[in-house]
Image (cartoon, rainbow, N blue to C red; front, side, top):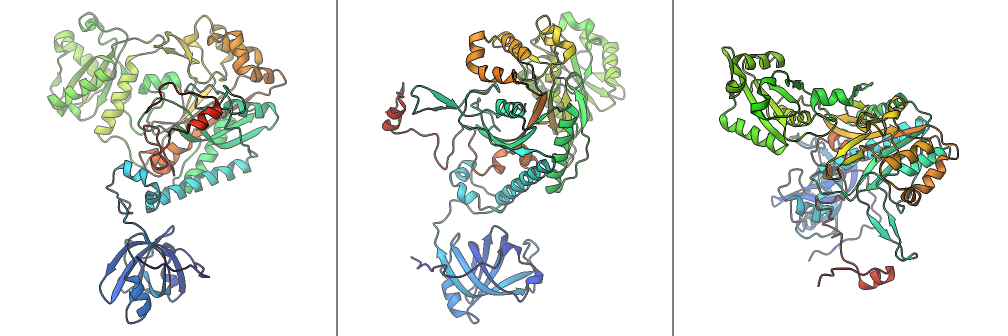
Length: 594
Ligand code: ASP
């Protein structure tokens, strides 16, 4: 057992990782963890790690015998404090930011021992994510995790500064509240004081931020935690962070302008230059050209409607609706196996048929030949402007969805997959895009009815108002999304500010008068006391920082993330609770496990 020293009155002079050539000859006191240790007998080298990075400490038996003796006891992740002198290295280490210097130790204090960690604290870890999350405190020591959290801090700080300068107030809204309709299940919190009653954790601050506008606060923002009990998916967190904001008397352009300014500055912090104004596209155009309401504009491969060209094959190929084609450049060389895989993928996406045409200088070849003939193939090639060496990929959908083009989203997915596979996605480009004029409703296949595409407070195009009951699929909302590189960063809208219209929308959504009163009575009342026109938006911070950190998974930029099974492996939550606690809450479990 190592005897431990006290920190005593030692004061740290700075971070080890921040030492540079200019510090040579300085007397320093450093504190941190043993990152690595090499014992060469008379010389012991310790890589000392702290939040600033790593510096090499040299313990020389001849120069500082006592410190050297003590250093023999150091092991990985021990906590140490060292005093010594900074010296230039004969051979700088280019891999370390502090690599031009090292510190010759004069005195060492061992402040704490450590068990052997289950994995090395390195950027490249081989441990499973499960192990990393279980020992998150060790995982947090990795320089990469630290720099991600530093980036997150700086991005959020810059957003706060930018919004403050534009007159926004940061205002907190309740965590213990009632259901907010963002379309997910609520996390419920039982009330002890009111047995049998529950709070809901906020799915978003939506209603409260609108009430802040009714309350005359004019410009609100919040770095808000939101909780949604949704079905598990690879990159979803049950609690997540949004930059949430709301303004009174705004035009859509005002809101876009604020967000663009916020993002220009937040991205600058991450060393990325962003040029406003961002591009805009209406929903219909995005679907028509890219088969997606969040198109990735880093590459082309736009959809081409070839329904006309397929017309003579409609009976034989048994398709309904449209046929959408994309051109995969240079993919005419795809093997049978690759084409089969593409077919499988299309089927899994809900395609009725996937048709491919290989284009060569001497003409097109395809199994469609029998159905459409050579002239038919040539017409498709002409329509899609495919060139020799290209592969035309066309799909029809198995099932038609009312009011939408069912084949387009399938083609859109294939576009993404092929773009990736063919390396067409430009690296280090940041393609922002505003999508506007969303349909107010979308068809819910499970419920067989029109359901709101966004939350029910979304404003409605005045000129579409009289179609609300007669042709709901044609009604456009005042909602908008911000998309970056094919990822939905956030969404918002100009809101409904008339009580009458809000009540009508609730009615259309199938809420009875009673349900309306019970769930939204307070809000409907608030709307009657002079509500200003207002609107806002929320951006997902976890996703945004992950993109800036060039990480695929949001878990890499959240200090204490949950797994895809919504568990915190370190704190071991969720967990069962004591019988007394349940009793106090008046709760009995139905299927209590032994
Ligand atoms: N409350 C919305 C959301 O969380 C954003 C908004 O409409 O401002 O997605």
